[in-house]
Image 1 (cartoon, one colour):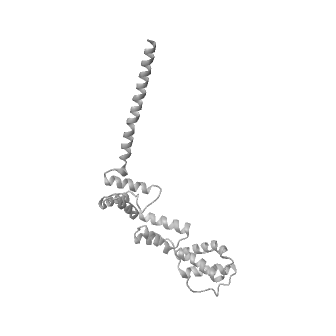
Image 2: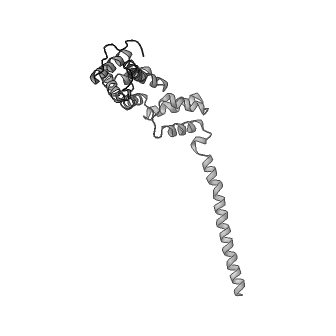
Image 3: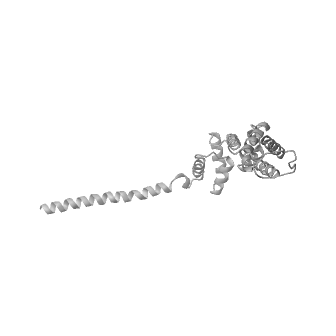
Length: 208
């Protein structure tokens, strides 16, 4: 009797374990179904569009054009894309004006880009021309020239030992790649070389 009772107890225990195992196994398909039903994989285009936009906006601001391009790549219908993006603008999740302002502030002070380069970058982001003009309008010529001098001062030491004309071309070329006008670039570089003691009067006046 004792053995039979022990065996029965073991059977009950094994059955309980089996039941729990089946319950666990049975839960997996539910989780998989839940994964399949995530918004971005939903069959509803609007729900998919919202999920895509929210994911792309996490941690990084985006322009309306950037989000529209992303939705198009994922084959979201144009009318659905327009509706979702307009709603995101209404609630402030998309703000191209704020994006442009922040871009100018960051890229000018962080990378030393001038207005011309900033305009080009914002155009590639799909920002409206009027918003670009407002954003880059925060910078005036004096601010640009001051930033150009800072950039030249940083690079001046690395050009020592080179011929004078080569120094001029290298430094002015660096400013040109960042969008500074040729006249301003040459003026800033000549002044920096003169302050260093370099005779810049007879440096080339041609392009770089």
